[in-house]
Amino acid sequence: MPDRIHLAVALDGAGWHPAAWREPGARPTELTSALYWRDLARTADAAGLVLATIEDALSLGGRSFEPDAETRRDRVRGRLDAVLLASFLAPATRRIGLVPTATTTHPEPFHLATGLQTLDHVSRGRAGVRLVAGSTAQERKNFGRRADGPTGLPASGRVEDDPALLAAFREAGEVADVIRRLADSWEDDAIVRDLESGRFLDRERVHNVAFEGEFFSITGASIVPRSPQGQPLITALAHQTIPYRFAAEHADLVFVTPSDASAVGGILDELDGGDDLRVFADLLVLVDETRAGAEAVWSRLQDRAPLTTDARVVVGTADDVVDEIRALAEAGVDGVRLRPARLPVDLDAIADRVVPRAAAAGILLPDDGSPTLRERVGLPRLASRYARQEVGA
Image (cartoon, rainbow, N blue to C red; front, side):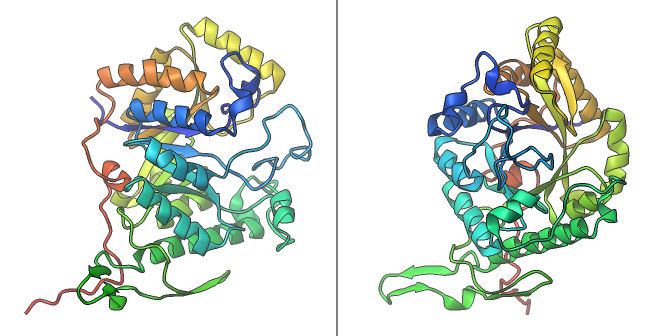
């Protein structure tokens, strides 16, 4: 039997297929409603999924570099801020980790860090973030602070051949570093709350972060006291060498997109993240009662708006999806993140059919009751780097 793994889900609007909003069962008029997102999160939570990522972008066209991304009318446009949405979902869920997507180029790192610390408090230790390096031209126009940046992958397809993309990943690394430093700036016992003396805070246990980087500098402490996890779970999506290096150096968990299970070994070798990096493989799934039924739906979707994706696509029954999960588990990943082609239909199928069958097959790790997301994926709670070390006599 292969090592058991976790299952996660990636939530994006009406689903990962661009034509999903036109499908029966879709709820396109509710995509910016609290009820819609609460229903999705509760379904994933009740199914026992370890975490849910929430997609985000800083322009109408999303992360697409297509020239008509901002103007075309046949795609879902408009979204809720992922960090704010995750904070709303936290008290509406019990166990699932909440991992909003955040672009590292434009938001202030201090604001991003405090938002994630706040999410960790309101979720009682279930906060994470998926950091995205770089920005599109329209995102830069929306902020109006930078004119230069990536324009898409270079002709070679390799990140290392574009100085702008290399700079974006260096900046993302600084953002990841500062998120961790600000999370550490309060020691666990910094708040005293001594009513008799009137002393609320031990100021000696709140530390200034003195960070001077290539892209920004920060001097000061977080405004948010240390949260349950210590540091939120930092995740990234990686497809090739430079993103793999970024993930190995800065992330706790990386999502990868192997073409099939046979490609996993090479990715793991290139990541070389050691014991402190968790690796989840992505699958984009469309699930129906029969394979023929699933293929008919997929054909209809593709006729309406062809999908281009980096992830392996599985169109079929729940058993077909479980077979793919099993193969990835045997290849050595720590988890699988499922991207539902249609929401909520494919998420319901994941919860009702895929998860029970994968559990019955002995593929899934049971929920061990660990109190935080970091611990649930097998990572330790980190002590503050600024904490005073006890010296033995």
